[in-house]
Image (cartoon, rainbow, N blue to C red; front, side):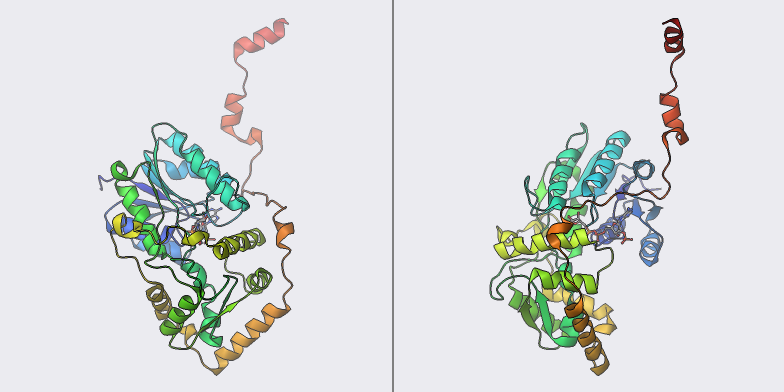
Length: 368
Ligand SMILES: NC(=O)c1ccc[n+]([C@@H]2O[C@H](COP(=O)([O-])OP(=O)(O)OC[C@H]3O[C@@H](n4cnc5c(N)ncnc54)[C@H](OP(=O)(O)O)[C@@H]3O)[C@@H](O)[C@H]2O)c1
């Protein structure tokens, strides 16, 4: 049995959660991987040596269970509504369980009055997790992930177009990090709290790239000419509606529109690239082209042919005919957090125990 501290990884089947689990396991750390459901991703994590915990990470009961016997944790709110709810649940459970060190995945944009509700919730989550005494924290605040561009790789492969609302094609506005490089910074902090407690890191890729640079890199990896096409946010919302990536709610789309505005304003280029992947993660940051090449190698469907080109054109036509989202309206609506097996107060033993009047109180009541 390992004498190393056990580490809970939340959002373990997600983009950064998977490599965080894998890199920790490679270093010999026992890992509990919090996933929503059993599927091929959780099976792969179990095969790599993780203890898989299936639950709802917005549920305090489940999070309390998941934290049992754990010393450190990776806090990763899903890209979904109610991030603050997740962060509050995580902080309460971590504080109760006496977790010694937390690495929290925040955002490059994290700012107190940010127009994005998700971002403000990240900001608040970052404050909350620092409140319990006796627990140290490291923040990892990446910018726009390289992975986001891979959402439109099909269109690049089959139609030669890289379409996103990123502003002018020639302006260098992001140094996109790979999921694995972000994970390497989180892992370094998880295994060495003494060095990294209290610090904030901003992992990036190795160089600032313009949309035209990104299109060229996609083209080289795909073996075809790819051209950047600047689109509107309205068009992006149509595309995400017509071909939604898994679990992208309308609320998430509305936030993505705010992030593309930040992108055009150049927020992700401020003091980027950083050297955090190299100096903290201990690895050479991966280039965007290499990230695309890795993806292409695992996706035979990206090899184009006449049939797939026709499929690409049909997918494009679907985007044109899909109504756009009313992004402003969505931002005024909040989703409601649901639990799979909710219980009323009196179904809970704990509630009954703490709400049973003490005998003396009963005596007093009877006396009055
Ligand atoms: N993307 C970017 O450019 C970017 C930039 C900066 C910061 N961030 C931050 O990155 C964070 C997201 O990290 P990520 O991309 O690594 O995560 P992710 O890919 O969004 O993964 C989230 C995971 O959480 C799981 N999940 C969702 N609801 C759950 C529930 N109720 N119970 C249990 N599991 C649940 C999902 O499960 P399923 O997969 O089964 O649905 C998914 O595997 C966000 O907080 C965001 O602010 C992102």
